[in-house]
Image (cartoon, rainbow, N blue to C red; front, side, top):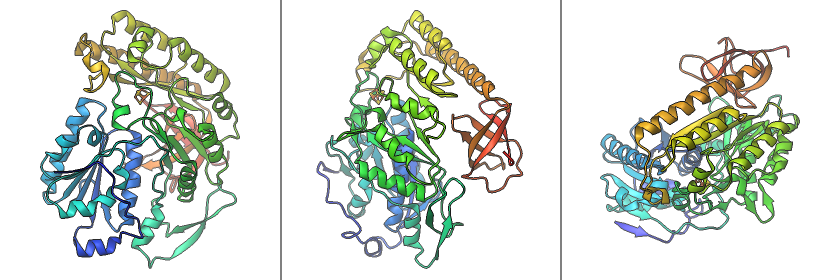
Length: 496
Ligand code: SF4
């Protein structure tokens, strides 16, 4: 196998002619499928990769279809994720025996040789270069040993490709007419150009990556090794993508990254990102996906409390444990008292705020008393839901070496208790809004014809009747009529 530790020069549209490449090298090899494991950040990066393939003349096909190139964007957060990646690679090879299998991302960064030794894999790219995968494909096509691209992850400010869906579409459909359409009521002063609306994949909520990697070094987490140390996206590059996403129809932008509260380029912080997004005509909502405790600037709470501001009243603040002793062993950057202060301040400042959290159960040496203090703290806090994860020892992290592991049945039991409390909290949160009218951004219609969307404060709402047509991507006043298991039922109020 060939291992490149230096990136190759970028093959941009001036130096790399996809048409020539496809005709000369592989005339029939035009279909590419994408497979993603892991977090929202990975999902959003796969979206960008898919558009860069389209721009190079590929046809993106569904995961289940045959393809000549299969791209797997990997996760490595637990050992189980690693096994899952390997299983997906084997399945892809079995279903597409002639395909080039390209494996990119976090697991490719941590263990490229193991991946390259799996049959069918021809290209392995770590975190630093994965967004430039199309630059390396030509080489992978011409050689039969797997090519590994594994340069050191840089700490520099980065840029990401900004490729409109509509332009990728137009590149393949030059003869289709462009028509000018007026945005709906949310956008009052912008005329935007779209390709024929019947074929444009209009966005509803779009992720905007502003940051990558992490410097916090929590003792259970592999991310600082898999994605590198914290680095930040060039401000003008993220502005460019945000404008493009809004032009493509995104009503809501979700600010995404590994540790977004630490964003800093020159003197600009996450507050400046929010300030900029707030000025974008056509954008209705700004959401922050997840942010580390003690990194949230207080200004953001002021923004959330202002009904005219686009930053929605939503906060996902990972606590992990309600025991100070466990937090210290985890090497988290805050105490329970600091966390409680932050939550209380947010809760008192922002009306109708939805606060969610992540919790880890069964961290090594977590005693029954420490778990009980987590449970007690959570009962008191004004949280709306928790995501609960059992601790899973990850090779390469300090916690992996800890001897006193919590037995799996105890982890299971603790997880169950927290999930049951989470369901109760969610129900209580929803109950507060029963009978009220809130604006819902309607998103997807499911195969059974039902449609759902989210309020600004992250209540999932299922439409109570299916008479509405063309609701997708509209923000409409909706009465919250009933509590459902994880969501609420809602009725659109047309005369509100
Ligand atoms: S804050 Fe901790 S858990 Fe989160 S990515 Fe950084 S090291 Fe991992």
